[in-house]
Image 1 (cartoon, one colour):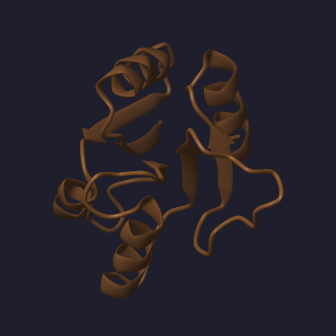
Image 2: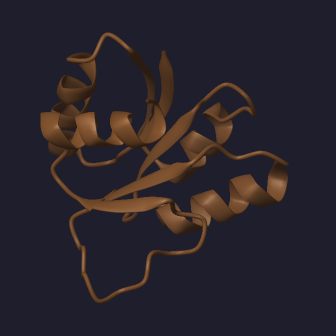
Length: 117
């Protein structure tokens, strides 16, 4: 079972993401609608993967990861999902992979293959 903290603020993207994640029996996820609510939910060893929108309304997904890494000695891999992917940009520090929205069945399968073989 892959335990995922899914951080997404947009209602439509959240609905799509939850629908896609629910298609997989081997994924258990918890949703947070903002960076600070994700910080409140996060606990070491509770999640195997963070699936984070980079453009959150309160703090960026990158800042969320920095705060988790500063507060805890362990942070699971982080996959960023964003509407603004530029192939020329470097992947932000602390982010394992970055993908364009929307979260699709194929994308969830690829993430599973990478982080939960």
